[in-house]
Amino acid sequence: MVLEDDPEYQLIVDCNALSVDIENEIVIIHNFIRDKYRLKFPELESLVHHPIDYARVVKRIANEMDLTLVDLEGLLPSAIIMVVSVTASTTSGKPLPEDVLQKTIDACDRALTLDSSKKKVLDFVESRMGYIAPNLSAIVGSAVAAKLMGTAGGLSSLAKMPACNVQLLGAKKKNLAGFSTATSQFRVGYIEQTEIFQSTPPSLRMRACRLLASKSTLAARVDSTRGDPSGSVGRKLREEVSKKIEKWQEPPPAKQPKPLPVPDSEPKKKRGGRRLRKMKER
Image (cartoon, rainbow, N blue to C red):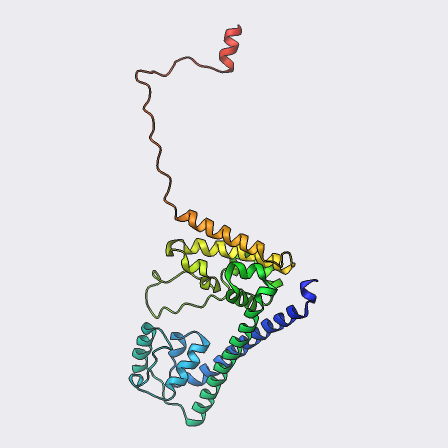
């Protein structure tokens, strides 16, 4: 059966389309919250980029002017919490009117509800990944495979994508809050959640990521044509990746001792080649 005609695959594609729609809807709500909350705390949007994190923080802070009374633990990394607190103490914002605040909090709740619905949809897709994309799941795991497929918009779109783009699927904009960029990680998307990537030493992670992306793309192409429903191609590719990463970690081969030249052996003055043979003939 062609994969495109399979009703179950159709359902998965619809689920992926739905999760993309939910994502777009969350972005629209995020813009609404930002526009309303800008009057209260204009700097917050430059400190917290991710829409869901932003909604959670706005809901937690609400109209409170003194951020020392608000506990943001667990919502943001401690470094960002520190920057947010310092910025809040010097902000030019004013408390919001009650009706505007209520609308903003409702929008935050809606965004969070949509996010949990998106998680449910992705969980369902994840549970069927072994059937839809056995080879891709064998390399990166069903959770990451579902996310890659969802972000790309279906298996056939993922199969048509070059590996360098697959590597960046799901990469978030980094918020360094004024800290140095030297220590920040390179841009990697969902591939960094794979077991292989996590078990690779940090110095080799960029190479491992490129390798994983290219093999995942190959596996997605096999799956999109229903080339191997048993998933053996994926398992073979995964072994290949593991072997390569192990090979990179081996120490370089020891240098062979160079033999000393034969003593008193002057290089011969005599030439060889065509000219010499001609001379001899003459």
